[in-house]
Amino acid sequence: MTAKIAYDDVEVGTELPAQTFPVTRATLVRYAGASGDFNPIHWNEKFAREVGLPDVIAHGMFTMAEAVRVVTDWAGDPGAVVEYGVRFTKPVVVPNDDEGALIEVSAKVAAKLDDRRVRVDLTAMSGGQKVLGMSRAVVQLV
Image (cartoon, rainbow, N blue to C red; front, side, top):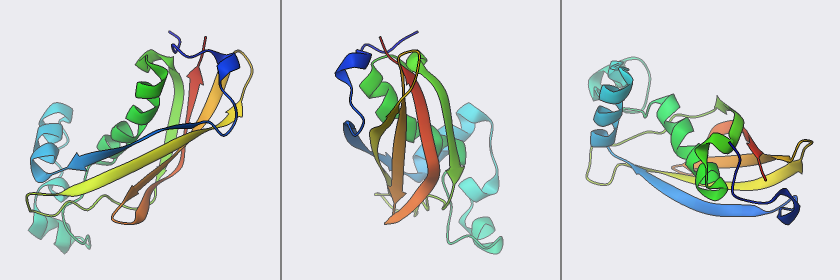
């Protein structure tokens, strides 16, 4: 599959529309059910603190998936993402309140590759800290 964006219309430095994704404890419970990942660090505050975390944290794969939504929304076709990888640098801490946490994601085209592909570099922040490092996606354009 390919994106709905023309390779010739994209320049290095093109910024993708930034997005902010809210995360609450209820979000984590739903994700745990969908993913099968019921590790107590994602829902049990007492356990999370006992293992040295500041509070309950979002699943890394959830954080990764939310971040790449900026790219898939821009591309217009999730199947256009042919490669995606990140390093987890800080956890997304999700307090037990009505607001939870926010994952703020920005991205820009960092390189034009061969075969009508581009590399998009993403920045994901939460609580003023970078939560994903080396976050990069390769997108197949038309």
